[in-house]
Length: 266
Image 1 (cartoon, helix red, strand yellow):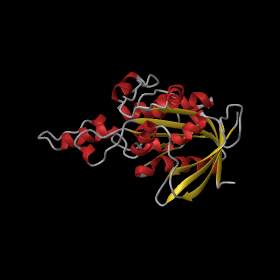
Image 2 (cartoon, helix red, strand yellow):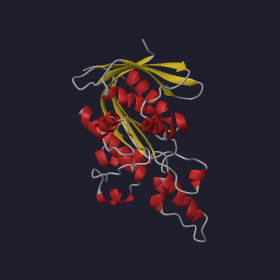
Image 3 (cartoon, one colour):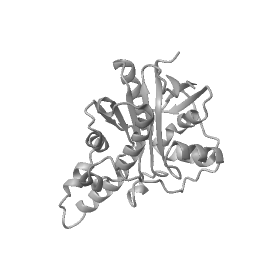
Image 4 (tube, helix red, strand yellow):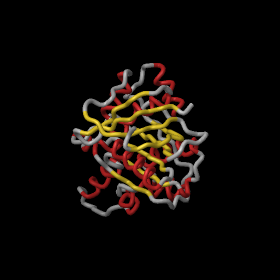
């Protein structure tokens, strides 16, 4: 039966070689995903010009993926709770701060400072969409997608209201990538609701399990799943694209995994 249940009303995804769910579907059907392909970084047109100039890659990815799922769900963003999940936040900004602190002039840019906090994408989301509903930003290293999904589903179950999950990761530049290497940049979003609607894509029931996580047949997509923490959710996105009942096991905090039963609504 599952400890938690929710209905997916919309999904968004951006990653190496694909900018949305339709492009991801075509990559999936080709069986030739390329982990080395560039990840599109759409300009966040929803932001005012000043904030748009300050937005880094992580903010662009988070907003773009979130907007895709939001549009499909047709929910009002001003009152939609959000959960943002990332294994490390803005790696580029972290690098620039480290460079400044290691230089003779250790003055820190105010923009870089306020972009350094882990909930920066949440703040930009609020500015862009006038969102005033509660927002949670979390990090669980490689388990960040699973932790974000669990948190969002708990909120849906507890409050009986819809919640938008946005997971994103951006690689660190050299030399930080020697310590923490990610396989690319990715943003992923799911709009979750407590009850089925005309827009529902699938019902998901979540429980805990142990053992191996579900692997992907496409070698390129499997490389993304293993090397990008946000990519741990790719099996679930694949299940939405190929609407057949299935059971998935997603990575979480060792030794636990998330056991998902996915039932299409269409």
